[in-house]
Each structure stands twice: as structure tokens, then as C-alpha cells.
Length: 259
Image (tube, rainbow, N blue to C red; front, side, top):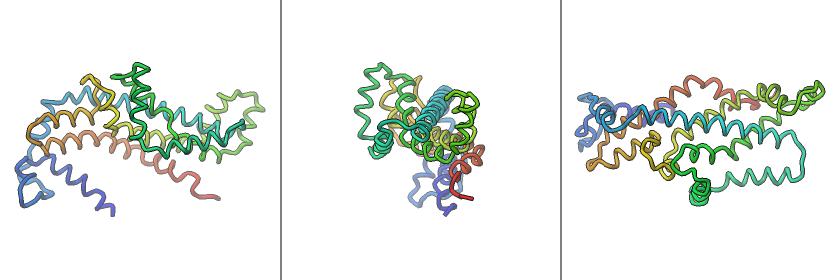
């Protein structure tokens, strides 16, 4: 099953070094390029400012991951450890936001961003994703496993609520925070539809939008250039996952086994 799942990535890697004629040959495409070439990468390099778009994408994805994780951790902590009127209703409301398809929210979200005058800015990509129902609920579930005695001990020692949150609670749930940050970073990095709607200036484009627009302006479909651009755009997040896979897996399995 792992080999089957890796099939598309292997074909993408191989096809990025193939010529257009080899990819479109009637006999089908093999996995090994018969005439390996870097023309697809040269083609993209001549038409796409990868440096600018890469910096834009890294900034937006990093800022979104940090802000979403912070808001989700604070919201989850409030729902897990505070008692207030309407707590159950708020929890159900947060859960209900996960049941709405993202496409349904595009028009009202665009109107809201337009009213805030955030169109064609990175804030239009960062701010809407800060309130994540998935992030709040997953943080709430993990924070319920934190012993209340530890929090009470901090209050007895005179620590304020923010001090307890930063110095006591956050270190205890660091694995799930890392996992949520990776999830959010990957989602922001791969986002295409929303950045395409709100970004107008080419200098603000993300990699997904930039590569798609360049390919769309070509009269003849350059499949090799598409595969090369896709490989370039997914390589950083693959390296990120490989570097942080221990934190990612530990965050997903935290609390799965009781002793």
C-alpha cells in the first residue's frame, strides 16, 4: 500500500525530467526517462520568480500556522478548563463550523475581507484561518487530559492565568501543538482557491497560484513544466515532514494508550 501511495510522486519526479514528446507518446509513459532533460525546470525558471513566490508562501504558511495554533490552544484551554454560562453551546457551535463545506463560506468570507480592506494582502490569507474549529476541538480534547491538580498548584503558587497557560499547560501539550502546526502549515502551503480569489498583484502570489497561472497562459499544455513546478512546490513540505515526523507522530498518538 505504501508503494501504491508513492506511485504518483514517483511518476511526478520522473515526468519532470521527460520531454513533452515522451510524456504524450501514444504508447504510454514509463517511469524512467529515455532522454532526461532539465528543460522543464529551465522553462519555469524563465517565467516564474520562484524566489519571490517561495518567500511569500513560507511567510503566509508560517504566520498562519503560528496564529492558528495560538488561537486554537487558547480557545481549547478555555473550553477544557473554565466553567462559564453557555459553554456547551459554544462547544457545539465550534463543532458545527466543521460541518460546513469550505465552498459555502467563500462568498461571505470574501465580503468580510473586502469590508475590512484586506483584499490583495497577505492578511486576507492569514486572518480568516486563525479561528479553526478543528484546532480548537483537538486542543480541547488533549487539554482535558492535563491533570487539574497541576493547574490548581500553579494558582496556589500565585501564578496568573496567562503564566499558568504559558509555563504549565503549553509544555505539557507540546506534541499536539507541533502536530497542529504541521497540519496548518501544510494546509496553508497547499491552498490554491482562496489565494487565487483574494490576491491580485503578481508580486503577492503564492507558489500554487503562480505556477498555475504561468501554465494557464501557455497555448500548448506543457505537462513536464506542470510536473516540475508541482515537484518544486511540494519538496519543502516533504522535507519539513521528514524533519519533524517524530513530533508529528507523537502528537497524533498522544493519549491513545492509557496506563
